[in-house]
Each structure stands twice: as C-alpha cells, then as structure tokens.
Image 1 (cartoon, helix red, strand yellow):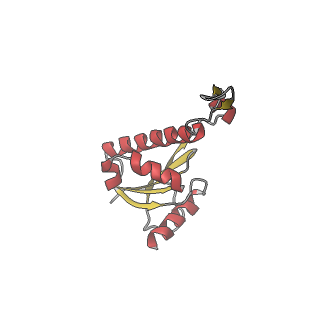
Image 2 (cartoon, helix red, strand yellow):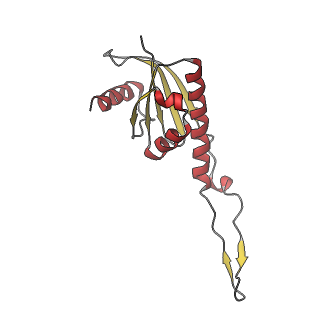
Length: 148
C-alpha cells in the first residue's frame, strides 16, 4: 500500500498529516506533525531604523529604506526548515506520495526549496491555505481538489 502524506502550510505554520487514505470514507486519524514559526513582533524583527543618509548634492538628508522585507525573510526561513524536514523524511523512505497545500507565496517557496526527489513524489499541489482546517475537512478538501 502506498503511503500518502499531506502538507498544509502558510508562511507561519505547517501541518503534516502522515498516512492518509484517500480511498477510505469516514473519519481518519492520521499521525500529525505541527510546525510553528516562533512569532516575533515586527519591532523585534526590525529593531533598528535603517537610518538617514546625506544627500550627494546639497545639504539635505533623506531617510533610507529597508533593502528587504524582514517579515518575509523570517517566513522564508521557516519554509526552508519545513522543506528540509520533509526532504529528510523522503530520504528515509517514509512516504510514497506527497500532496502539498499551501498559500500561493508559500507554495512557490516550497517548490524551489524541496529537493528533486521530494518533488518527484509530489502528486498534487494545491494553491490554497488549508493549514487551519480541521483534519477531516482538510482531507475532504484535498480529495475534492484532486478530483477536479
């Protein structure tokens, strides 16, 4: 029997359902692993102001902008950690098929971060955030999305 896992993620949390049986109707209680990003306040992430710079022409000064989005960078680090964990499970042979459901931006990040071997076992990608759904609703939503 093939072992199917479902990964439901957004930029701050992820849930991994292990051993889902799409052929079985009715309640299922697959093993779950939950990943949570350590929540930080924006002021903690962006602790220092970027500062001011002197104008190259004239006596004026202007505010400098952040060169990147620190909150987005934190989410990408979290997604990379989740992808690394999934890749580790793939190397152990823990699953045969993987279904990835994620918020669009997170799904794009996962596509680039998951290994080639893990992506080869990915049977479906659903660009929706199902990470907060109860287990049964998550399974039925994935089943419905895969039938369309």
